[in-house]
Image (tube, rainbow, N blue to C red; front, side):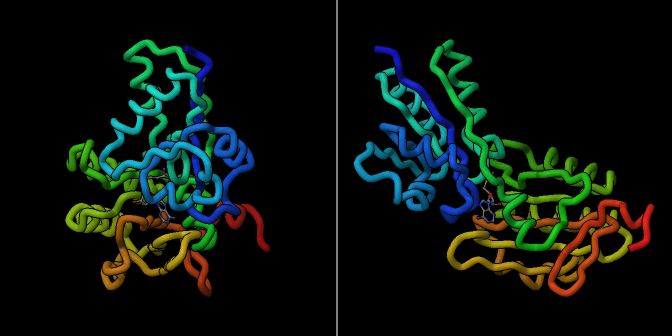
Length: 248
Ligand code: SAH
């Protein structure tokens, strides 16, 4: 049949204003939209009249496969991810699957505002020096490997962004490592549902963060500062280094 194509669309953190114009165009152009059910709710404004294929959380393989099948039927398919589709999203699985089977279908990856950037904008400017992004999901990656990355990132004095902080034991182990390596209490930002209904923004530190554990769920991202990160008023700031060179 041919002429099918695939958009892998990053939807941004939630509200429509934070979608890119290209993402919006792709959603409007698509004949078929494939995504995790929660994301399909976020884009209800563009799904009318289209074939919409929802799936539950753990059905990533199904979503990638159906996207390819529909494109092979000649359809324009938008496979959607929240945030950015490369960042713990669907882009690599789709490309991987296509490569393994040797499918030759045009694919456009459309970047989006990933949670690290979205939540950090709510906290102030904690990502203003080198940072590391780590997913605490141990569904695919062994726990030891994850904790080893947390340790190396903390030793490297990176600001650390923790995605998928859903497993309490893994989160606690990670925060223990960060606290142990940073000599002093270090600012920690916790943002739940950034740019969505029921958004919560908390600024705490490596000693006190557990008081807010009840806020942490499936849609929370945590940002632990580096040794220079500080809090003033309700803003978490990682200085870029101007203060080392200039007085202002
Ligand atoms: N592709 C997405 C990440 C998917 S992994 C992106 O680029 O943002 C799912 C994790 O993303 C969640 O567990 C949470 O850590 C984070 N996340 C996604 N949307 C978020 C939001 N609106 N607010 C806070 N964290 C969010």
